[in-house]
Length: 172
Image 1 (spheres, rainbow, N blue to C red):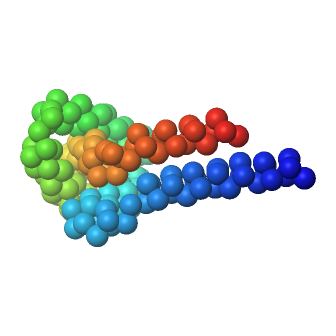
Image 2: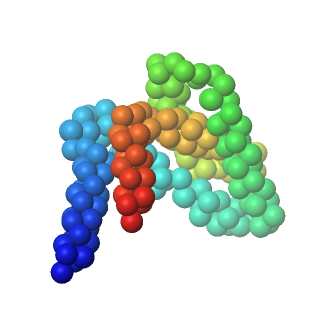
């Protein structure tokens, strides 16, 4: 019988630690902040819209008479320019929050322009321009949004959560 009580104490202690981890990770005050909500909603909207060109390009290109190889080249251009956008915004923004914010807004504007170019495309050159703009903007957004999410959610709680997770794992 004493063994059961010891196991119960360990389980209740682990449960309490898991509750503390959950409370640290889900800080409700962040969701009352307009800045935090705007970053969350913009990243969710970007995640939804990020898939549109990959579904849209092959059908639009085939309707315009381009081969599947040419539409695959457009998707490759998006990938290459996305890497270029990540590296470029990383070098240009540095540690300045103001410049990162300007790039964040600029990237959403560029992404919107590229979507308009896709919709109005009448030649392969316009498709290439739209793919380049979309790739650069997705690279910029994906780089900056990770930094913004880390600043909002993980600045203080990251170390606390990791230490509590490690303590729970070592107790088990």
